[in-house]
Length: 220
Image 1 (cartoon, one colour):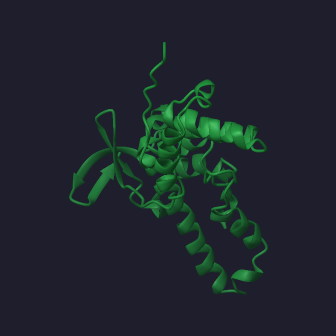
Image 2 (cartoon, helix red, strand yellow):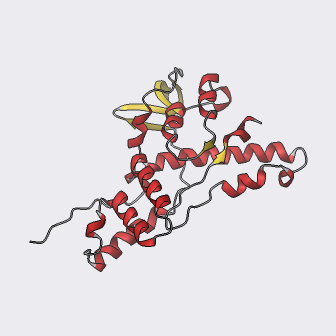
Image 3 (cartoon, helix red, strand yellow):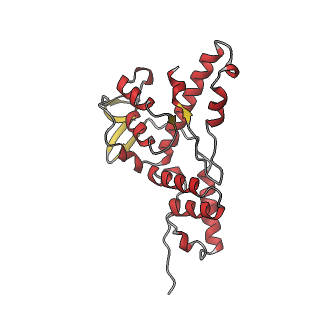
């Protein structure tokens, strides 16, 4: 008797949550030297296709899945989403980073890198907090009381996570440009080479897995 497979194929990053992405990232790092294993990991984590069924998948179905994923998988430079809803609660992105509470800033910068890894949910939980007042584009979010219940961000789509990451990376680079151009120029900064190399780099083998950018640069 043939077994019918029911797959959910995402068409954009909103269909892939942080939990799936982190699991995929871990497997891709583990099997980075094995192309077949990487392919199996992508199809398992993004579409729910268990590796045991990969070999029996019809070639036309395989190509259709691959083409669908390929249409969005390299698009990680997504816009910041100021407002998101989790479990019926509306959250807002920190409206004024320059006036962020010291505790929030300290909890973010205790992480050595700014990247989507196992610490990322905690960073998102600091930057996004419940909205207590909103009028149009103006809004106020709850005061920061410490990093609690960050696991809720594991179920948020990667479109939100990538949008936040690239907003922060672009802000970091703008600050570096402004600061360094007023002194000896960008090229002479002792950390700029490593920052540029790590900023937006891709882990090879079909997925854009961003490497970390040092948070220490944000403190200068």
